[in-house]
Amino acid sequence: MHERAGTPATESDLIDVEALVRAYYDLEPDVSIPEQRVVFGTSGHRGSSFNRSFNERHILAITQAIVEYRTAQGVTGPLFIGADTHALSAPAQTTALDVLVANNVRVLTDQYDDYVPTPALSHAILTWNNDPAKRAEGEADGIVITPSHNPPQDGGFKYNPPHGGPADSDATSWIANRANELLADDCREVNQAEPSAVEMFDFRSNYVDDLGSIIDFDAIRESGIRIGADPLGGASVHYWAAIRDTYGIDLTVVNERVDPAWSFMTLDWDGKIRMDPSSPSAMASVLANAEGYDILTGNDADADRHGIVTPDDGLMNPNHYLAVAIEYLYTHRPEWRSDAAIGKTLVSSSMIDRVAESLGRRLWEVPVGFKWFVPGLIDGSVAFGGEESAGASFLRKDGTVWTTDKDGILLCLLASEIRAVTGKSPSQLYAELVERFGDPAYQRTDAAATPAQKAALGRLDGDAIAATELAGEPITAKLSHAPGNDAAIGGVKVQTADAWFAARPSGTEDVYKIYAESFKGPEHLAVVQEEAKRVVDAALG
Image 1 (cartoon, rainbow, N blue to C red):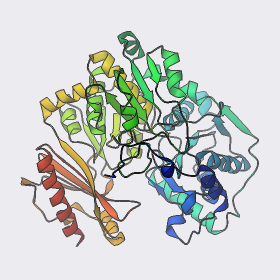
Image 2: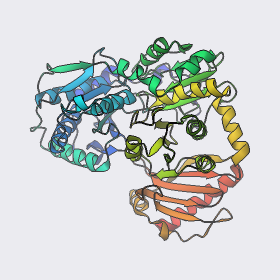
Image 3: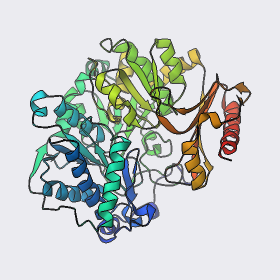
Image 4: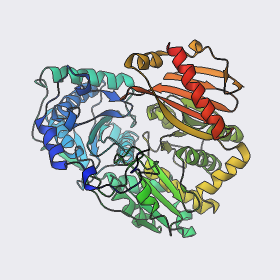
């Protein structure tokens, strides 16, 4: 923990926004350097113009590659495009529009020249493709320009195909490989033109006006609860006022500032400015405004993550809120399919497993990455999908798809519905879950690893782990593939009756991540973490 974590940012913490944007145009990447190539992680290509990993040429190449990919896939409808409030997002959108228009792609941008949250863009794609008349004009897809909660100097670029969610690895690998080919050829095969033929689309109204199909605003309004919403300077900034005015609820936007340097933020755990609504350090300024609200919420820069603050418990742990949301939704959505599963990533809390069992619902456990939930959300076989990193989405009241990307605005509104309908805060409801199922201790830590060790961990088979016990309990499972869909998890997960750990290599640092949980308390968790490192190190040789 950095000594200044949770304290206000000072002038020395802020980026030079003008220099960052200049570097976007002036600095050129060298594709022979791995760190300067196009690399798609779980949420698109990310980097900074300062270190030549997110520059104009990257966006030229990626956009041309997306054009060629969608053509090869037979996607002929409009492409929705939106950007968040990061400083590099606007210039990246301008670059992308140049390429899209030159390739005769029908492009729809925000009619207010406003920021576009990730869930609003996913919603737009799905709404178009679910309308037979619109679909007859061709399937739609989209581009979201955001590095999510990453620091202000970063940029991000993500492709959402016609299913509306994050592209799968087959698509992203093809796009990244083609983009790097274009970069290596000095972008000579990239088409560019002035973006004159661009259509306007009202992302905000289309999203906000449809929220009544998934959230019980009547209950919220009639309860009279006071709600505070902090966009954390992100893309949801104008959406919250629209939600208030549309549904007549008592909601205050506690911070309407947009500043690409994020000078109003408090520093995250490592001393960096990071718009993570699940981090107590990053949310310290929000917590200072908690008095007087029954529910106070925060979102990250593209509003795909949520943070829930209650008067009785402060900022909720994301795992705790996911468990409460699942318990509430599956008992308050009678039109959902009776066999609709509960989706969770395998590093999310086992409290969810116990809630699922008590509900008589199938648990669908998948690797890290929201893309795995997409098919189930579309066909209704998975009614809720959630990640431990405060990202989730769920179905409409009638059991049909809402978004296939994470929706932080939705999960924040759900907290108010829960409070209005039950008369209890989500944190009070979690305390009741603890009384029924036990009180798990959960933590993520990092352990040093060489690039070779990280590669070996990513390929590790559960059977290669020789241990038979973990922290005094017999090991019941050694997993290298997720139970829900048998997809490789890029690491291992080891389980006992009361504890588990998962180890995965970091995509950006020379470490591997250890997620661990114990229903026997913090001291037992510490033993689990210690033994987890020994088990993994032994398996890696």
